[in-house]
Image (cartoon, rainbow, N blue to C red; front, top):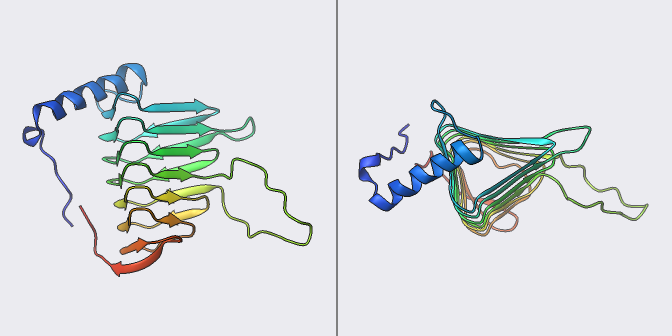
Length: 194
């Protein structure tokens, strides 16, 4: 398998400048980077940790206006873990009250939402029992979420998956497929992407 490689010498000067600022912001302001573990958090990106933690992988990049929240309870801490060389683009919201784990080499496009909880209590009629869903979201390695994708609680997305723009993921997705729609359904097989 071939990994996507980006050489710094191939980038325009303004992109290099943005990367340096993002690494400094990650290192100094957010304390999410070190000399051996580099991540870039660009201007306007926010990380909220209250009874929870956000862990960024090596060479992880959060672009402008990304919002990541790990808000747990006194009984259980929330966790957001983002893998190595994963990039998250503009206006994406990742909100964990329990556990969201994103693998290595993932690309999450702009305006995506990943959420592991309903955030409200839903009261059902006494004669109805809703299907139980887990309070987690797991994305495997090399997962590509197109723009405006929503991933709901209780979902596991396997390795080497592409989810088309505007899709809503409500159940587990198997490896090596492209999914599209609301709810997301398989439309074509793939080996991988980079």
